[in-house]
Amino acid sequence: MILTARASDSLERVTVSALCQLANVSRNSLYRYHPDVLRALREHQRQRESSVSARLRHAVYPQQAELIALRHQTTKLAALVDHYYAAYREAQALLGRREQELAELRRRLDSKPVRIAG
Image 1 (cartoon, rainbow, N blue to C red):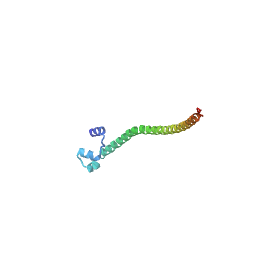
Image 2 (image 1 turned 135 degrees about the vertical axis):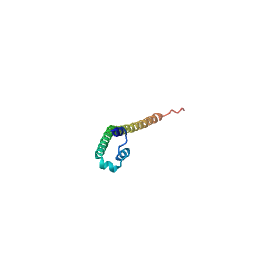
Image 3 (image 1 turned 90 degrees about the vertical axis):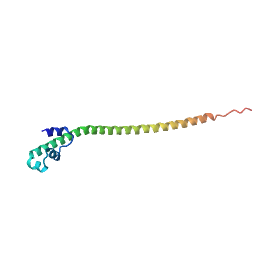
């Protein structure tokens, strides 16, 4: 029982080899004479693996949801960038036409006939 408590506190996986080394018995002896210990070890390994995978799922699922939300936001931001770039180009074209019209008006105003003194 002390081995199980120590193993569950540790992050390392309890193996048959480690158990045999700790108990100072051969693997063959464990398999042949102690099948109940081997079953208990296998059950412990299954429980640990399921708890580790559950903890991993709890850690991964929120991150996946956040990733999906970020991708959705990225799509919206890309659409906004396209929209504002199109608006910028349209405003730039309007300002260019306005500048041309103003330049034409200035030329017309400057081309008045001048009196010659004589």
